[in-house]
Image 1 (spheres, helix red, strand yellow):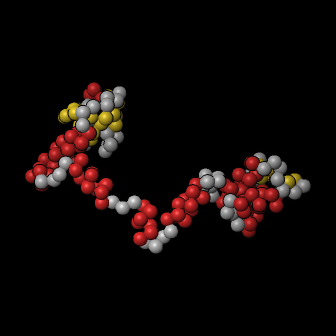
Image 2 (image 1 turned 90 degrees about the vertical axis):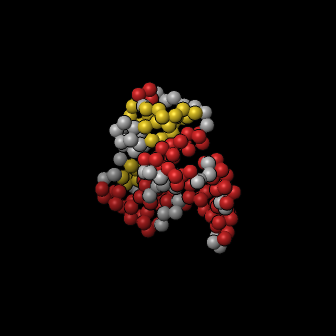
Image 3 (image 1 turned 120 degrees about the vertical axis):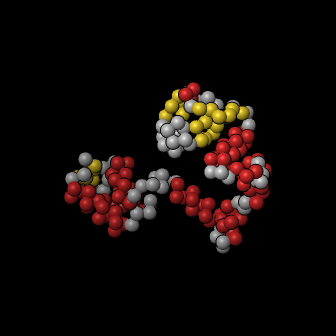
Length: 174
């Protein structure tokens, strides 16, 4: 079941699937129980609900006649799917090796999650390695793409700031 519902605060219209306990307006964020939302139409077909919403919005702007000449959502969606090229074809047309791009994407998301900064990688080395020496920390960071010069400076900075202690050439996070 799909329903075209409206917001009493900002007059936004949107399509809801099912009967959720509460709903939140996508425009103003007002949260209300579903039973208190104004339901303009309820239908079994999502495309029908989308078309009714589009007609209501067009009528609000006195553009109802312009919408009459358009195809249904289902027909437009089928045309779009037929005319869109896939990512691989697009990349190849721009001179990019799609296999290399896919491999780069996999590499970026592997390892430490792809989101650690260089400083976080040095800290991670301190946490994961058992009482590491400087060379072990630098090696760990280098395996994750952090330049040795940067890792060394970051380690010294962490020691000076008191976040890390050094004793007999071994480091640990405080």
